Image 1 (cartoon, rainbow, N blue to C red):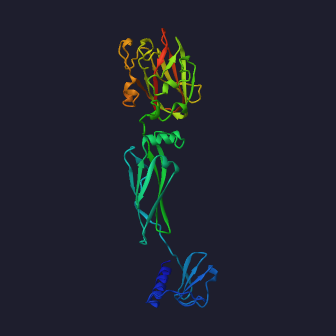
Image 2: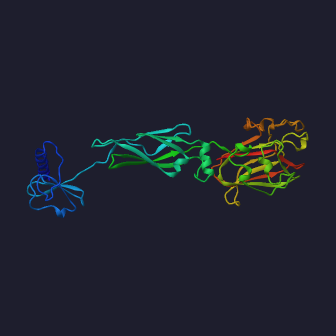
Image 3: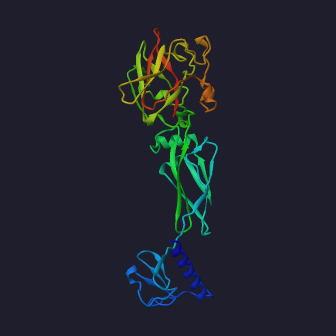
Length: 365
């Protein structure tokens, strides 16, 4: 092999010496002389008549051949693939919804050809980040927590806590492409969103969910809409001594971890004001059959009301204008690691009267 390499070096030296002006090599029809001849297959190389320094290119093998005066030698034409000088990491992690991830992907070409850069993202990336590129610098700007949730609600993502996607970085010299696939993680979006309640501020309207009940309801609230009507006069009114449930079916599974119960606004009749249910619990299910209790409350919980029921104030004075909504009503937070399609609120009215609640707000992801 060393002698072959020396022969090729000698031949190239002869060729260069025979062409001191670097004139363009021309095709010799008979394959003789020091011109370049193009053949379809290696079988077309002439066995006689070729002289030292003759060159031929074979289409079928994509190789150059050089004659040293006694025979043909292959001289492979090589274009090396670029190599990374700054290789993107795998995995890549977006730390939070406010901090863009900037990634450098820098390559070099051994032949000195300028590198061009590009990238390909998995489909789910469009719901998690916005991607921009400046040459070899790639910026992944995270979507907001609300945007991610909206993508879940639309069925484009599975987990409202975030997710992962693949991104393939590419560097090309025009012939060969260097690729690196990385997994980009964007998760931990745990802040609960207002799912339903407060009218237009919520992700879902009352008409987006399916309401069912076993609790006997009175006074025009039999469809449960009074729970989510964003009105100081709206209410859900349980019958005297009633026990049962009201149930909400969401269009996609959600993970509720907080709820707020608001009193009915004062009407001057203290026996019907405030929040008047004795006990309750909130449950979740995915088959509308097997239920998991997420939170329970018992009689004695106060709801931002004075100690004397006869002096109930209008708690909706601030609530109805859409400001400072989270400071009103009783708020209950609990741990829930499961997405449920169905949620059931089991209620028991007072032993001596009717059950009343003004508004309900459900928070989660």
